[in-house]
Image (cartoon, rainbow, N blue to C red; front, top):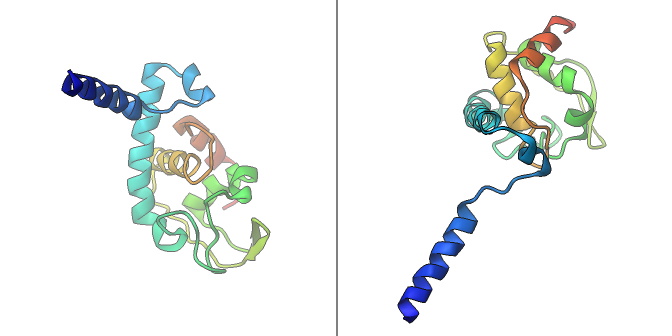
Length: 149
């Protein structure tokens, strides 16, 4: 009897632990939207690792005073359009992130597709204390139309 009780308890804890925690925003999403955001997060993480992590670091913490953090970044939260544009076209000049001034040129990656930018943005805007939700391809397209090149 004790063994059966133990199995039941382990089963219940496994179910609870494996159930993804949902934020209030997740509760409003359809199943298809949840699948899409998960797909963007996975693809975005892979693209981030290839194109961004060398400077911004795998954990989004940045690198000393050379490359700004993306983790809990006030700059990301306040400059969505600039962040999107910088992925494709780069960024030059001083920026202030979490009270620290950075002035290292960020090269753009002109070969990134709109979808890839949306996936990277979805990943960085939902990691390390950032909570924005899905960054849709159509939103990226609209922002990129207005970038200063």
